[in-house]
Image 1 (spheres, rainbow, N blue to C red):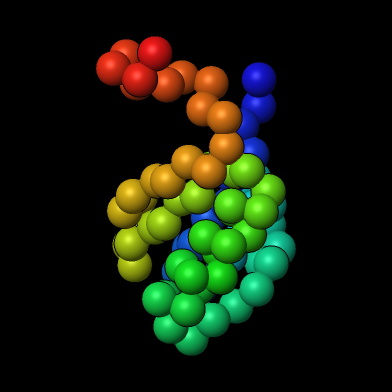
Image 2: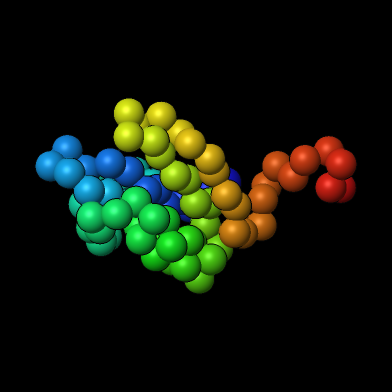
Length: 77
């Protein structure tokens, strides 16, 4: 099962972009990371996707699932 994801990633020219997982084009661009996170979280909730926020260096800061997780934690069964 392929998992849908949306990501907040740093833009090489400055600011932050929201992208679909595996996508090359930005869905939307923001100057502030907090604005990108707020908007991206709404998209992710609406589409039931996993929401992944990246740090300035591109590493994952924290993922957040808004759909049916195919691998729930053991304590959530």
